[in-house]
Image (tube, rainbow, N blue to C red; front, side, top):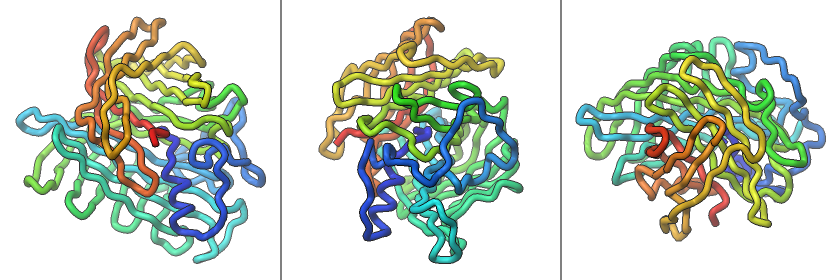
Length: 350
C-alpha cells in the first residue's frame, strides 16, 4: 500500500524470471517468509539507514503521491514509486544478485492518465537505493536528497516531470510505533510516512509544459510476508484535509467479503494516533468500468472517533495503472465533514 503494499512486486518476478512463484495471498504477498527476516513489535528505527534498502526482508517500497495545481487552478495527480523484491534470502554479486526492482510513474489530469514502468535487476547498477546520502533510482529516474529537501525525475513515452520537495513536518509511524499489522493472523510490516512534503516543478505533457505546485505524501514500507493467504486485495486512502489534519486508512479484502482495517489520524501539528481493526470504515458508493473492470471510484469513509464522515471521489475514474499486474491509483477529492483531497489505491479488482 502505498503503502505501501503492491501487486506489482509479484508481477516483476513473473515477467523477468521463468520460475514458479507461489501465489498465496494477493499477488504472492502471503507467501511464506522462510529464510527472510520478519517485522517484530516495538521496532527501533535508525535514520538515515532505514531510508535505505533492507535486503534481509523480501519486499520493500519507496512510494510518493502528490496532489498538484496548475497556474489556472486545474488539479493534477503525480506518482513515483520504486519497488524491491528478493528472489532468495542469500545475497550474490552482479547478475546473481537476487534483488528485482520495478518503477512506476504516472500523471493524472481530469481527463487523461499517463503511466509508465521500468523493470530492473539489482547487482548491475541499473536500480537501487542508497541511504546516506539518500538516492533511489531505476535507469534515469531519480529521487535524491536528505529527506528534508529532495529532487525527483521520471519519464515515459508521452510524459515526464521534474520536481523539488521540501518536508514541512515530522515523520509519521503507523500502527504501534511503525509496526503495522495487516491481518488477524498477525502479518505485519514496518511502515512510516512523510505526509507533509511541499512539492513544485514542471509536468511535461503532450499538451505542453505545466508548472505545478502542491503537497506530496511519501510512504516507506518493508516486510517479508505482508498478507495472510486469504487476503485478495486492498483499498488504501491518504487524505489531506483543508484544516491541516490528515488520515491514512486501508481495508484489506477477504473472500468472505469481510475486511481488515487500520488507520492513522494525524493532527495539524503532526501528532499521530493509530486506530485498530474496525475503527476505520470505507464503503463503496458507486463503481466505474475502466479497462474492463468495475472499480469503486466513489466512497464513504468514516473514522467516528475523529468525527470523520466524508465522501471520497476520483478526480479521473480512468486512473488505471496498466502495468505488469494492473491496479487503480489516482487523486481524489474529499467532501463532507471534512474538505480536502488525497490519493486512493485499489487492488484485486480483476
